[in-house]
Image (cartoon, rainbow, N blue to C red):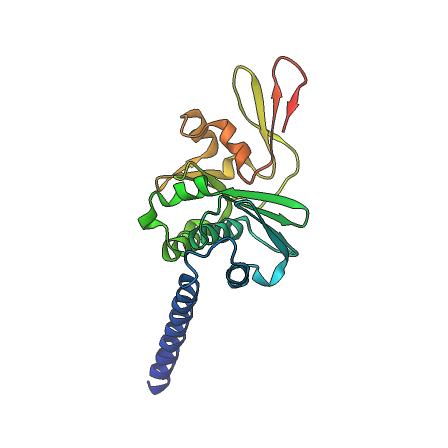
Length: 227
């Protein structure tokens, strides 16, 4: 009986320790709110405090854009977007964040990221971390459309061949890296298969070109390919 009590108390202590670390990290970042783009020292502190902070090769600020280069093998798109959200929240007048990771380029725009949080009251460190810690992000995250649509890949496959997913009067559209049935859209907390969401016009096919999927379209009338 005493051993069970000790184990329960130990578990409670561990949980409390994690909570304190989580809150202290938020607090340490919160004091950097309203950092100016010209304040290199604070920006470097922020970059080192978020995901992949130890893997930064270099960064530069050009006009109102922040360009960051990482040297890292194992990374997730959701963490790049989370980092962008935190940076937009903490740094004033930042308009665009561009990442280079192993010769792959990713861009995040403040006007699009801000739509995820709907208004300034919901845009804070707590809601940012709650979003990316939610259970739906256990699946492979592909990106966000218009603030209220998150796309995920539930498959265990990764194929390189293009698969037809949609066609209209002008083009046939193709996507790689999954069984199409395993790509889902979460729209206002309701789950749809991607094809279903496209057919019901809940998603515009062209929006898929702006997220983390490989897309191309071919003209129906000729051999024109557009990536």
